[in-house]
Length: 271
Ligand code: ADP
Image (cartoon, rainbow, N blue to C red; front, side):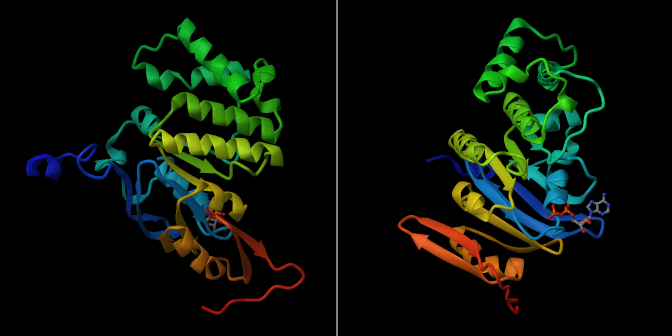
């Protein structure tokens, strides 16, 4: 058995390797958010529009100046340079506008720069790597297109390729399904499951609660900028009506669960 000293001081192998959000506040928008995620977990972040999901992902991603802590294996991510931080935690934004006329290929190649240290020089293997991800995501034909001219769905695929190229420890996906055609969702679910097998941490928001139920094993509910609950699938199902203030049907078949809104009428649920 590992020694006590090892148990006390090792966070990456002896203890529980994890991401911890601790007493996080952002302006008046996020209020005292705390939760923990173990490696190899996929967190479904749920809540009504305006509940603070995007703001929380931006804080964890290091784009907003929050107070409180985001710790990875005990390390305060605020203490890292932005170059190092993007390698630990990286983000799939809902919308990305880039003002430079980069082609898809140039844009993806530039995403490898933070991996290169202080004097980046890109090599043949980087070009091969970018090309292999373009093929993997079925967007090789977009290689020479200017990024800003792409459709919403095409952009999302390029941004997923960028995220996979950087391959951080923590992947943040903000509404990845929003612009994707329905046949791309199983593909996205595959990507998330593969990341889980590779012991990454994934935090994902989606309006499609059934997609979240399918990919996530841990759930965090936000309501008015506060943590409403955090827990597993059953806790999510117990809390989901109050989280959205609406009556929902929860349908179970064999190992699957579906959430279906009542259509035609809407009933408020009292807290
Ligand atoms: P969600 O992703 O759950 O829809 P957001 O994180 O986008 O919620 O927004 C949470 C709240 O913060 C909303 O009330 C929104 O209007 C507000 N908000 C978001 N961005 C800003 C900003 N840049 N300045 C001021 N308020 C903002």
